[in-house]
Amino acid sequence: MLKVANIIEDGRIAGPQVRMTNVAAKLMGHIKTTLVFPITNSRALQERCSELDVDFKTLPLTRLTKERRILLRYIFFSWWEVIVLMRYLRRERYDLVHVSGGSWQYKGLIAARLCGIPVIWHLNDTDMPRSVRTVFSVLSRLSSGFIFASYKSRAYYGALASNAMPQAVIPAPVDLERFETENLVEPSSKDRQLLKKLDGKIVVGTVSNISPVKDIGTFVDMAALCSAGRGDMEFIVVGPVYSNQSEYFEKIRYRSDKAGLTNIHFVGGRQDVRPLLSRFDIYTCTSTAESSPVSVWEAMAMSKPIVSTDVGDVPLHVKEKFNGAISPVGDAACLARSVLALAGDAELRHRFGTASRREACSAFELDDVAQRTLDLYIKVSSRYDSVKT
View 1 (cartoon, rainbow, N blue to C red):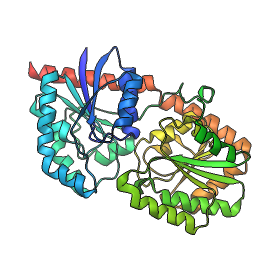
View 2: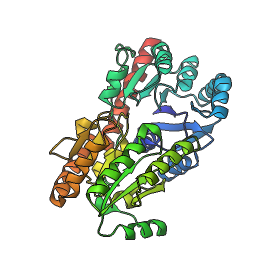
View 3: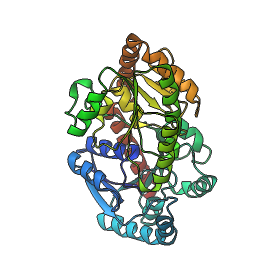
């Protein structure tokens, strides 16, 4: 049985961490996977691993960030963190390393290659600073294979990633059974109070952390335009505010207050988004950049019509007159027109929601994603073994 270390340098739960845990759990019995992530800011991820019975290891790793204190540690101690990873990988004798989190996460790549272990680099972004892309172009030749989270990511990195290496486009998966509307869980007492306020309302929501790339400002502007057209709409943002985004969040709150919005709710993060997501009548994504946004796929799995900006592979799965609408990035007026059209037509929302569920079942099935990941693991490992001999 292959022994795989799946390394990510950010312990906060987001799409990549959800994908890592789901796939690791599904591959039990075929692959021995250990998730490796930072000690700091990873309590929720540790709890998720324990819940799914996924093996994990926390190490003193720092993430790339604009926060001055953490950034300085990242700059001055990355070399030491590579050594820490090397010692761990050698001690545990891994057959393969899977580097998750995107092109800026290279410590696991360097550590693994210095240990003589093959590496798959998982690329799930479509908008990186030139400096990061330059570093990637140099280090990419160390990789033994690539997973692109979307065709958009493959196009973004294609010229920099060697076609001679095994590679695959594998989207973020969804646990389809978990996101069936029949498998709802009871909301917390706090959420029950919120849900009671939403009775008789058209609810438009999004699930994302509060950050500029998610462009919550455009969500606020869209909410203001919709509210001017109808008086029966409520807007919900489900997602945490991390310390490095507190200033951005204050600007968003100010923007909302200035628009006079009393029907927008920033409810914070949830370990289980289903009780609130199930109440959404329309799901929106206002991001400026995505690859394979798991929150959108989960909303589709829960039979929601989708209104999204033109990001990542979303347009491959959300189509006009089928299950939603696509708007240009930053175009609040276009988003609002699509949301209002759905808000005024319950039959259309139901038809689009049914189509979303069908598309999610076709494209994001967890068993299929896990099998394609396993196939690439075996291909890279076998190729490496043949080169060694």
